[in-house]
Image: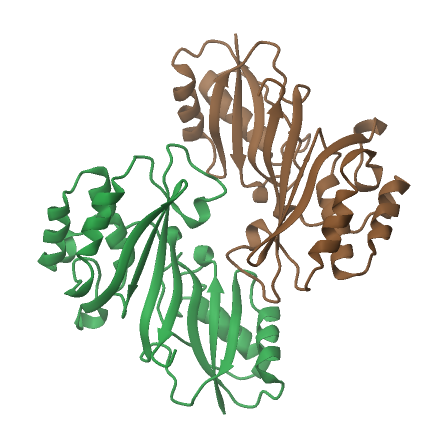
Length: 248
Length: 248
C-alpha cells in the first residue's frame, strides 16, 4: 500500500464542490474516486486539503490517496488519471507521500485568489472566472480594511466552522491589486471557514463602493456574528491557488 | 434612421459561428438581432466584419446595424443591449457611424490571436480558450516558417474563398511568442479565408514537432492546394482580437 499526494487543478463550474455528497451530485472528490476505481478496480478514498464550495475553482488543491499495487511509477499514474478524468479536472503533479501524510491536517497555509472584472460592461471571455462589479471601487479603502484581517481573529462573521467548532483562524496576507480591468484579491491563511473568502470579498465590496466605512468593516469583523457580513461574492471568481506544508 | 457601429466580445463555445444559419442553430448574429428586435420591436439586420467559425471567440468583432428612432443616446443603447443579450455576448463600445459604413467591406486589417497551452498535462482552467499541445515545440522553426506568410499570397492551401472567389490575401504580421506555459500566435492581415488561421496554426504545429521542415511548410503554402495543409487547430484557441478601419 502506497500513499500518493497530488496537486489538482479544476474548473468548478459544473460541480457541487470538492466533497462527495450523499445525494447523487457531481463533485471533484467523486470524479477523482471514480477515475481511481477505473485504474485499481477497487474503491480508493480521496482526501482533500480544502473543501471548496460549489462552483469554486482550484489551481493547487492537494489530495492524498492509498493505492495498493501500482507498479508503473508516479508519472504514469498521473497520465493514466488524466486520461480518465473529465476535461475540467486534471492532476498537475504527483508524488509518493509518507504513510502519515494527511493533506488537510498537515497543511500549514492555504492561498486563495478572488478575481473581479471591474468595468461598466460585462466581459463574456472573463465571466467564467470573475465577478463583474460595474461601479468604480475605492481600492485604497478596501486595502486598509483588508489589513484588519491579518493576524489571529474569530472569523465567525465571515463563515461557519464545522459543527460549532473553533472559528479562530490566522491570516498572513490579504491584499487587493489592480491589473488593467481586473481587481485581484490574494488571501493567505492557516485555514478558512466555509464561505469565508467569498464573504470577506462581498463585505470589502461594500467598503469599495462606500456603503460601509472602514470602521463598519472592522466592527462587523469584531462582532463575530454571521449576520453582520455583507452578501457573499459569487463562487465563480474564487480559485484555491495553493496549499503549503511545513516541510516545504 | 441611424447607423450604429459596435465592438462585440463573445465566448463562441456555444455558438455555430457568427453568421445566421438557415437551420435553427444559435449564432452570434442571431442573438444580436434577437436583442435588437426586443428593443426596436422590428427586425434589424446586423452586419459583422468577420464571419467567425463555430466555437471561435472574439474580443473585437465589429458590427453595424440601422436603428430607426432610438432617442436615448449610444451609451444607453449599449447598456440596453447588454441587459438583453445572453451572458456570453456583450457590447464593448458603441458609436454612431456614417450611413455608408460597412464593417466588412471597409475593414483594412483584422487581427487574430491563437493560444496554445504547451505543457505535458492538461489545464482545466485554460482549456476553454486554448489548444493543449503536449509535445515540446521548436518555436524558432515555427517563427521562421510563419515569416513566409508575410506579404501577398494565394492562401488557398489554408482556406476556402467564398464561392470560388479570389484567395489572395495580404498578411502584415505573423509571430509566435512564449508566455510561461502558453504559446501565443498573433496574425494580422487584410482579411482571412474561411478556416485560414486555424489551418495555418495546425500546419505550424507540424513544423514545431518536427514532422514538417520549414521547407515543407513553404512548399505547402506555394502549392495553393487545400489538401496540402496540416490538420486545422481546434476553434476554442482562436480569438478575433480587432478589426481596423482606414480612418483609425
